Every structure is written in C-alpha cells, then in structure tokens.
Amino acid sequence: MGGDDFIILFESKDWQQRCQKILEAFEALYPQLYNLRHLQQAGINAVDRHGNETFYSLLSLSIGAVRILDFPNIQAEIDLTEYASKAKSMAKRIAGNSLYQLEATEKNMK
View (spheres, rainbow, N blue to C red):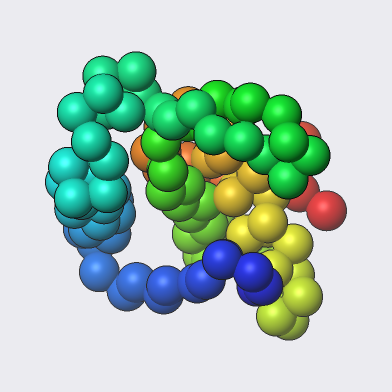
C-alpha cells in the first residue's frame, strides 16, 4: 500500500486470533523500546521538527481487516486497496494497538 503499510493475506479461519497474537507480540516489545517512565506515561516528550516540546504516544500497530468474500464487488487490486485503506483508517481511530474488521454494509460499499 505504501509507507509503513503492508498487506497480509490469510486463508485460515483463525485469522482474528493470529492478528491478536501479532498485536500482543508487538506490545511485548515495549520494554525493549521504552524506559519505565515512558511506559508509565504511555508516551514520550520530545522536540518536534519545529522545535516545540511535544508528547508522542507509544508506537502502536493498527490492523485493518477486509474479508474479501464479504465484498463481492472487489474485481481488481484497486478495489481491495480502497477497502483496505478504509479498514486501516478505522483501525487507526482506535487508541493503542487495534484490529478493525470492515463490514460489508451499504455505508461501506462503493
């Protein structure tokens, strides 16, 4: 997709559990990435590119899921990318590490 985005395709029925394990494994890395104070305050204070003191939350992983079989109108990669982008955006709205599955409703359909 671009930047720090990537796609994983699962065929297994336990894909949600696999995604949860990914989220748990990511969170288990926090003690290696942050000191105790940062973990307690759930982020770090740092100077941004404009020289301003800013609070940054801990890194998080957002998983936006699309079950292809739920979207019969996916005909090309661009269709899948559009739905995946929407699922990712919804996942990023959830604080911290998250998994969001896009549902095939009228509101979400093309």
